[in-house]
Length: 598
Image (cartoon, rainbow, N blue to C red; front, side, top):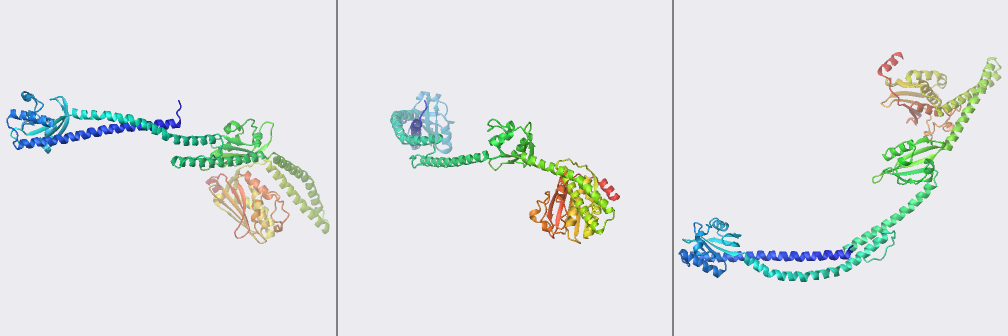
């Protein structure tokens, strides 16, 4: 049978009351027993001292027969056993032993009370007497008498037991009366407490069922009421927060449902907590994956690797991937860690960039095709112009032909750059790594640019550290990169300006810097100078004949070589292009041979 709270409270109170009554009765009996023992010992000690005083004053006879008879007489008067013990420990008188049996009684000199009396003047003991076969209480004192050395009195424990037996019945009666009273009081006092507990339980039941309306309940002013009101306040606060969370989740789900990007949310164990419709379509998820591990649902290895890195707290770069099968869509997926001090997890966002990649491919194909088709007529035009120039035309005709030749050359260069950029975009060029001497490459670049350098009166300073002189890279592509950067620096530096080219070695690779004394690059354009066809402020361009895609080619070539390039400004004025090549170092012998060869 299931007990109610009131029944449990009643049983507990009744048990406590009964136990308290029994403990009180036990303590009473124990206290009375101890008090009776103390009274008996005190009385015996007083009577023992009185008998000893009578012996010392000579008020008692001296013969042995008279001593035993006197012990009997005193024993009857005081209601205790009186024993006279001689100096050698023999019993010369005992009220509980007949005179004829005294000789059979063993000597008492080594009894505990006699030994204690000999040492301290007063001896006490409680033990079973082998002489009379009764539990006894003993007191003894020494005495100055010719025949008696110690006087000992003893009382039987049966006297104490008799007195205790006399008080046990009233005690049991008191217990029998107090227990029903205790039960009645426990039942009466449990009623209001049980009523309050039912009110608290009712409120908790409503809250558990999802009904958070606060009912007017009188919880009382004691500690139970304080706890109940505090818990009620906590529940109401949690109800408000749950409502806010539900509204926020509904808004979030509405936002995610309207997104074209796929979103996947994982907890710290890698289980899926949230996935929107776009992610279902992109990842081909048919059923509800909530609560399952992402490795059971996501089949693409690159996406799984992204999520695994994010769950560890690592920052993984975004990855572009193509879905398998007949679905040739292109996605860009990026996972980020959602870890904080209390929770963990990861968020995956997937963008469908199929249309962007298709449009980019169309653009690349168009540029490549147009550039290829333009190269043939431009070559023919330039050939005919050169032939006409060789025929020694008039000065006016020569001027027109030179203008045609110059613009044809510019168009050929533009077409060539477009074709190369198209090849780089299509990854048709590869790096052929070999040992390259930076000093020789820079000398070749300066030789090719010598006409432009002399025409502008530019002063070029080369500074190549010995440790950076030889690198392992593609010499032809590094030559094209250096030529483009130095040519830009010469064109943008003022006439009679200065260009610096420095190369140094670091633990990570080789760093090459190309700096000039030109106007520099506006801060807003620093991040865009490597975009194709992007030109810095047109009013700052002295030579509009550039193609506008040279730096884009530089960026592609440097990335093909495994490095990176960035643009900045010198504090004194002018632009600085920093090229980093994290390539393997040649041996010290290679460097020595290169220096000797140079």
